[in-house]
Length: 256
Length: 227
Image (cartoon, rainbow over all chains, first blue to last red; front, side, top):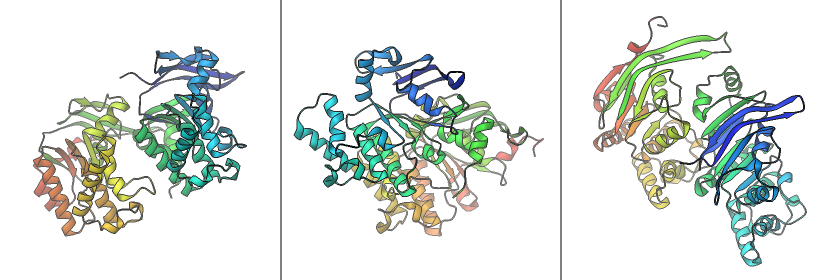
């Protein structure tokens, strides 16, 4: 089987400060990988390098495109990369406000992505948007409301709907459940999990919440000071951590 | 089906001045299809550790653990994920689920994961829940609110939903009443009849004697220095 994403030796420095270094991994179709680590460990830097939001200093991010097979996304032209970002890729921001247009309606937020890939039939766009609202458990009658009138949890679900409506194959998520209260977090986890299974998505999820990765991720990568200190099956890394830092991290979790 | 050859395990505790604990050395074990092997030994002798190593939950330092030809010790994460989906089932002592998901879905999930039709999966889940005496009015609720015994039975239903060719059972009859214990034992017998290779930990001696063909005392694998 060909990997969907192949990452080789990514390194990113902010001047003299290290962002992340020597990161390599393969992600296969249908796999969900979690990236954990304390704040400042380089996990968001890495995610942004992979998603094309930041340019790494060295390395390759190879993506298995539908038409041309493996392509280095870092060497793609800007229009190509933008096309990829709104078709096969999706990016769910920690703060829903960063991923939504707050000034246009919920339906418009979803329609925009569809129109970007060529949909022009207003009726069909609206039907699809309505279907997705239902999938993320937002009442249909809110379709013409602006996201600014939504609660934080609803905004986050709308952001997910907006991202997944075009049927991407790879989703990047930056702390998708951060800052939400636990009951909303549980719904969102359930939603993400069932969407991943139904649509056969691959996802890379950055979080500092170990309980979230245990439920969502098949594989886990632990980062510290810009380096990957340990990686493997999620439950194996959490239950039998090998690295000193991972052991500290796992043993620091509060029991509820 | 399950072949374990010269397996060793060491825990290194980096945060306690890198203490290294050698917990298992040269463990060998073989289970054929239709056979059930019980792991015995006192508490702390390494029964659960060995089981977790077979499941790929604990890393193994040395040796081979072959399940249907796949070496868990060397396998890539995705190969282990695939193995767990289709070949190797594990019934742990604790139920770990996403909050808010209904009991019916929790039990049907292993089948949905391998692409079984939703209706078929649901029917199978209903059949198992009925057999394990979970009242029908609880099926739509999350098992997290259930009693210990009920959670244990949901966990068993989930573990037996898909007919895995190899199964690991960690105290499947603990905290169950006589009737449900009987049901679980018959589930195990059914699994053996269809040719599953099973490794189990049973504190319940009568249950062990009834379903197991062989018993292995894991304390013989404990290195002398640590004992």
